Length: 362
Ligand SMILES: Nc1ncnc2c1ncn2[C@@H]1O[C@H](COP(=O)(O)OP(=O)(O)OP(=O)(O)O)[C@@H](O)[C@H]1O
Ligand SMILES: [Mg+2]
Image 1 (cartoon, helix red, strand yellow):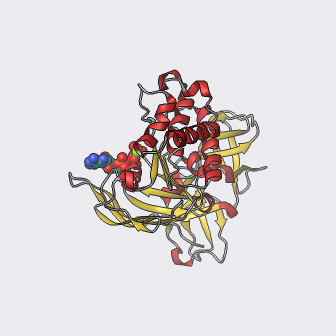
Image 2 (tube, helix red, strand yellow; image 1 turned 120 degrees about the vertical axis):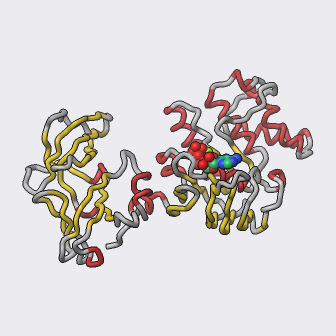
Image 3 (cartoon, rainbow, N blue to C red; image 1 turned 60 degrees about the vertical axis):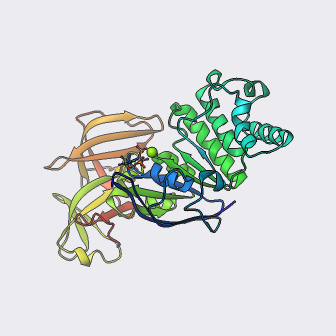
């Protein structure tokens, strides 16, 4: 078990491209930290730096209080699980899991005990241990890759999109298994994904990366309830938050959304932005169908998606046909072309400055 500390960590690749611009984080012993962000934002680069597979250009990296910048991957007491599992095709499942332990020079009986123990945790049968990886399903192979990491009893687990090759149902199942496993083993984990549902459900904390910089670091609930920027607001939550261009009134006490539709602001309003433009963010699940048109947004429905438990209603409103998605629970029998009254409650709205793209605190 160990903490992991990144202090102003930076990476410039040999071709001159700066992929990581100074990342700071203290990952607690036993914590599950998820690195999340769009393709190319630097998630794998950062993870591979922790693993020792990429050099650190600048800054300090500590594992268990010890500076490891210059240590080989094998000396860092970490185990990594990759997207493609990287299993040895010619070895049995048993030997795939035992291989690293043989290299470490453990005795045959110790190796056997560790592999059997991991197989038990992961529900891999004796018979499956004797097969080659190609004779297993994707989910089983994924478990072998996990097993290979577990048997090493590392201080830190590093995961790089370990579930992205699995189908939707198996992903959900393995996600739950990984969560359970991490909780019961209590091993500090850093997990890369661009799937925000995985990020929200797995992480104790999430680090949102954008072009090699930390946009926000916080618990899933903090990021959902208090996104620090438009980028985080748009990234966390599915379907994405609606973003509406609004004007703050001259007295700063309300925002003007569309003709005849104004929303009063809390806590005395927004004096700092009085009379200026702002962006109002509201999640689809925080919009409601209103009983009447009075004070409501008239939504022209363009598409309805029935998810079973919920209905997603997509449409637009106003002269400039602003897009809006509304999520209502249950099955709502509306259709394209309908005009629905939609109400916004101020409890769950977010305001952003259009020039800095940062959250405006009320
Ligand atoms: N060896 C390299 N040399 C130069 N640039 C690189 C190298 N490896 C990665 N990059 C660049 O660094 C940036 C970050 O890459 P990285 O693989 O960390 O992204 P990622 O967030 O893991 O993306 P994805 O979600 O697609 O896996 C990208 O712009 C990528 O093109
Ligand atoms: Mg990657």
